[in-house]
Structures are given as structure tokens and as C-alpha cells.
Amino acid sequence: MTDLFELSNQRIRSAPSGLHRFLYPVIQWDGRLTEIYGPRGVGKTTMMLQKAGELNQISPNQALYISLDDILFFSLTIVGTADLFFKFGGKYLFIDEVHKYPPKFSEHDWSAEIKNIYDRYPTLHIVYSGSSILELHKGKGDLSRRRQVYHLPGLSFREFLLFNGRAELPSFPLEEILNRHVSISQEITTRTKVIPAFHDYLSQGYYPFFVEAPQMYFTRLQDIITVILETDIPAVTDIPFDTTVKLKKLLAIIASSAPYTINLARSGQALSITDQRTLLKYLHYLDKAELIALLPREASGNQVLRKPEKIYLDNTNLMHCFNLKPEPGTLRETYFHNQLRILHKIVRSETADFLVDTKWTFEVGGRNKKGKQIENQPNAFRALDGIETGYSHVIPLWIFGFLY
Image 1 (tube, rainbow, N blue to C red):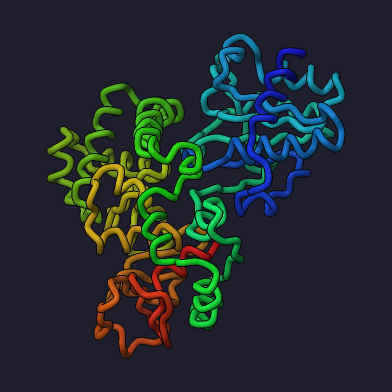
Image 2: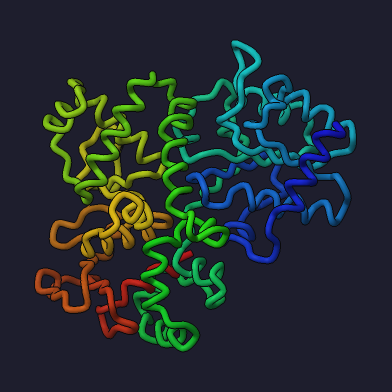
């Protein structure tokens, strides 16, 4: 137990203090079982370490942080660790990288062990985190009725300004942005130069590690992509190695022509996949891993086996990672889709680019983009790049990065 406390305290001391992701104050940390999931590199570990440090300042060693990809857990079990921690007076157990846990029992996986801990120790608070692909996990321990679930995406444009030291600004609900974007944008532009900051964000601002080593940003992002494809997805889906190769090829095809309007027959032929349902399932894996983003025609129904209308890379930083000079129109659409889909339902519009919450229609473009196709529609807006402030139903594109 001494070694675990020592490792935990080392990690806690190394975590940056002061700045928190938007989700930090939202999470009910006193819940008995809390799941935090999201793409790699967005700050899940840092957030857990920050909370553990805060708790240990109140009462030393009441919180323990463990990462299940540590070599210690090739021999240790989660249940055994929790039992020891509880006997030492522990109250908050933070478990990172749950999908990397090497199972110790043929009939039990990490979710079954966490369920046992939950049932055995009613006063112990458990917080666990993992990749976005946890949504694909069909565990042997049913945690669905016990857990609180939180999704942590990458940084919003607002958070980028905060983490970059440029400005500390509030977020705004979408409806408030639509109703009073002129006054909001005027307030923000007096605090910081948004246009150059926005271009920086589109290139390398979605993942918080831009603060650590900007010159290594894309190298680290490439490493993350590799780990997701070669380790994370296979760990949850049990797909064979040759399938990971197909996933890489599929991602490369999408990256080369995003937004990608998929031809199932042609794409299947290129990847030697004869069953279209298999191809759609692979797209679903990449979507859940938050490497791509599927734009459906409708907001309801099972999207797994439906052909998407368009396929984007998940965020604009991935576009820059794959292509040094992304097409501006695609960059704008990718940004808008990425920022809106965190809190809203976004689908293809019949007359414009996007329909949000079945209520608002958006056309996305450059500063000279006309809106003839939507001029007679109610609740229709133009989100335009290259402008600081708008008017009426013309809204600066960058301001949609202030939703969270």
C-alpha cells in the first residue's frame, strides 16, 4: 500500500493547479460511482489528479489515484487494491485507464471488479476514467444503474483562450448567442484579439497539451492516433490486428477528402470489406473514438447501421495533423460541427449545412458567404469566418466556441 500511496502522491504533485476544465465544477464528485470518458489527451487524468489533490489537502491520504496501465496491475487486482485502501481509511478511489486493465479472472473484467467494490464498500467513492470507446464496452459488471457519466471533449475556443493566458471569459447557451451575439462579441473583442487566436486554435488548440511543448504538438497527436487505433479500439472490441490496418486505411481515406460522402461499395472494395454492415461498424468505432464525426440525416434512431450523410474528422487539429493546408470551407464546417455537437443534436439540413436541435438552420462560410437559400426561412443563420462581430442573423463563426 505504501508504494501505491507514494506513486499516487507523486502524480498528484505533478498535476498543474489553478486552471480547470469546464467539466470540473459540473461533476458531482461525492457520487458513489462516477465515470469520466473522452478522447485521449483532453485532460481526464489531470482533472482527476487535481480533485485528488484537493481532497488530500482537506484530509491526507483520503484519496488515492491509480492508473490501470501501470505494470503493477499485471499482478494487482482492482478489488484487492480497493480493499487495502479502504482498510487504510481511504474514501476516494480514482481509477484511470480502466480499458487498459489486464483481467485476472476469465469470468470477470474491470467493470465486474468495480461493481464488486461498489457493492462491498458503500462509503467508498469511486471515480474512473477511460477513452471515449468505453461507450462500446459491453462489460461483465452492469454499472449502468449505479454510475454518473460525464463526457469530457477537447478544449472549446473559450477554454483555449483561458489555458493560453489570453482571456478568462464566460460560456453562453446557444440560444443566448443567437439572440444577443452582437453584444457578446463586442464584449469579448474588447478583451482579446479573437481572429488571430481563433486561427491558432484551429491549428493546435483542441488538446490541452499544446501548453507543454507546442513544437511537439503534432508528433504527440500522431502518437495518440496510433494508440487509439492499435490499442484502445482492439482492447474494447476484440478486433484482430488485420482489422486495425483497415481502420487506419479507412481513416486515411476520410482524412484525404473530408467532409467525406461515403460510397459504401467503393470504400468497401478499397478496404476488401464485402459486408457493408461491417464497414458501417468500423465507421462507428472511429466515431466513438472521436477521430471522426458522422453527420446523420436524422437525429433519431439507431445510427450504427445507417449510412451517414457526411463524415468529418472530429476536430480541426486532426485536419492540420493530416494535412498542412486544410481546405478553408471544410475547416469551418468541422469546427462548427465539433463545437455544437457536444451539447446539441446536429444533423444535415435539407437547405443549408446544418440543422441544430431540429430548430435552427445554419449556413457556414467565409465573410462574403451569401445566404439566399435560407433568407426566407425562420430561425436560419449564417455563421461566418473572418468577422469580429455580426448583425441580425449573421454571426461570427468563432463565437460558437463559447458554448462550454
